[in-house]
Image (cartoon, rainbow, N blue to C red; front, side, top):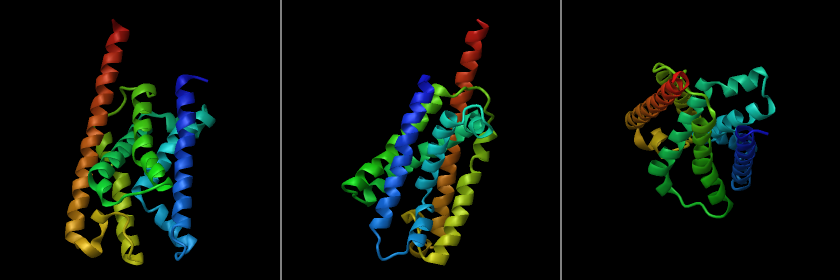
Length: 214
């Protein structure tokens, strides 16, 4: 097994394990709510959705190498986009959410795994094992489609269930205008991180082509 495949296998297991543990903690920690409602809420966290993407991106090249899903997960655009989402998850949690709660025990373990370990694992995977040089500047705004769809879902679900995953999405407290401003600011941050990913990709790709030509 090559280094990339071994690395991805290890962190795929870590990622799926962390997601399973977080789901179990959510179910057992809220006995007054139905499993259906808790499951819907679970998959309404951007952190969870991104960690699912990270786990899939790490798993498919290991178990499906050579297949269409494996090639899709191994493509430069997919891996770069997932990396961008993962980096944003880590940074937004650290600077906007970290001080708002104090997890203990297994909740602390899973919190560290989902917000720090897995984003860093995806970033290192992209830096070390993903081919570079094929991204275009237009890719960065294209990657905003996912957070835009998520924002729309959060608004619909929030109004329907009176439940909001993060304080900066809570329209019932902030009002629609302030929540929209926070969301717009986050979209700009997504774009900045995406452009940084493209810039790194193009720089490394240009360097590698220069080395081959020399």
